[in-house]
Image (cartoon, rainbow, N blue to C red):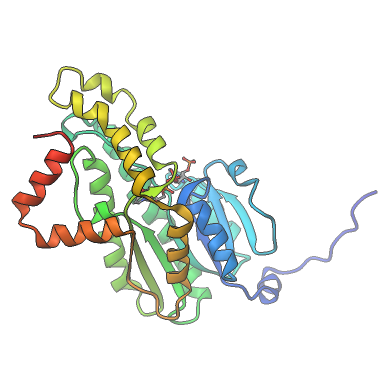
Length: 295
Ligand SMILES: NC(=O)c1ccc[n+]([C@@H]2O[C@H](COP(=O)([O-])OP(=O)(O)OC[C@H]3O[C@@H](n4cnc5c(N)ncnc54)[C@H](OP(=O)(O)O)[C@@H]3O)[C@@H](O)[C@H]2O)c1
């Protein structure tokens, strides 16, 4: 039997029936982005969950308050399709969560690796932000718009063997601070600065560094690279926060009447930033060099 034709509804009518505020999250296939879908839905948000491979979102519990869309933040056509797909919803928030870590000493880093790191973590983040800002501004009542940039403690200080990632997250901090000045008071820009969170992040580190262990053979970095990923993974699993706990802090900040400018997630992020501010630079650097086997 053919389905009965439904009367056509205009986009305006769709929007007037759905009074929810919708938030689009990038990078929901795993980790913080995935956990944030549930946290925001629990707080009454509609969520547009996006991922490069949309099939990774198939197990999200269905509901009126969920849409899923494919999105690769480095692909202009993919961004354009998402912009069109959001028009029927009252989009008032964007969470720029997608990102990965390109690790390795700067001396051995390939130009294309640095470029790719910036394409995703920085340029992609700004591209989707610019593309969705007009909708957010049009839909949100004054002060209720939200743009969230998930940076890192490594956007505030730098560690060795992670120069590309550190630089990308410092750039995210700068973009958030400039954007805040430009879009206030209508839209609040929230900068999230997590420490170690238990996610897929450390598994993808190893994918992103490709043949780095080969390149490092015979260099002064050979030994430290061998232990680097394992050490960071161990640290995250011993001391890291769960992605759910991190997501709760982000959702709380987004839902607050007066959104905070910064959300420092995790004691490690907090204390590392305090130490960076208070310790003499030479001492801070000596501690870091020693802990990464560079002394
Ligand atoms: N975990 C930590 O300790 C930690 C600490 C500080 C900051 N952060 C930041 O938190 C954010 C989320 O990371 P996570 O820890 O949750 O790691 P994760 O589990 O690896 O999640 C990263 C997400 O980003 C997506 N992504 C990567 N490149 C993309 C692109 N070009 N377009 C769209 N999506 C893309 C991944 O999708 P695919 O599955 O398709 O690759 C994945 O969904 C990142 O920005 C990361 O830098 C993490």
